[in-house]
Image 1: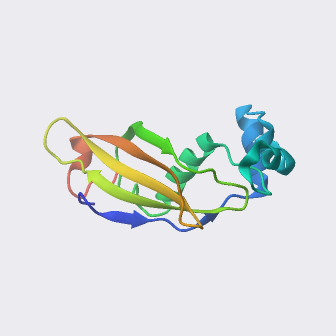
Image 2: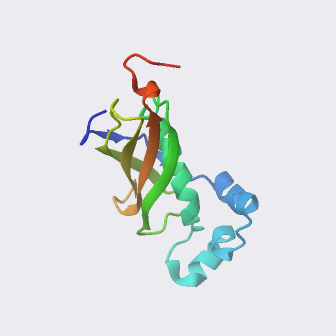
Length: 148
């Protein structure tokens, strides 16, 4: 991958099952995550439950794995930066992720970083969230042809 390269994920639907599991796994008891009626009454203007924003970050990273961007990665995640949420996503929304390489690790120096910009959109084209994903690599892991 080179600076400026872009990848695009497959589409993914936020399912009712995951909407049931997210609050259970995280302890987020906000009624807008549990009930269509509560979401409607909260003024979201939708007939469906709202997906917790914090859940959409790991979903976006998971969708990135499907693009193959991490297939040869021998690094480790070191952070998220500039996380910004723009519009809510709801149960049964379809998401897709665009990934742009802002900085790519090189084999010089003892440690190098790759910086990827993630932008997640829903089926309407509205931007749901964006963030920068940072991975660090050791010099040894960046040698050409290294796979393990």
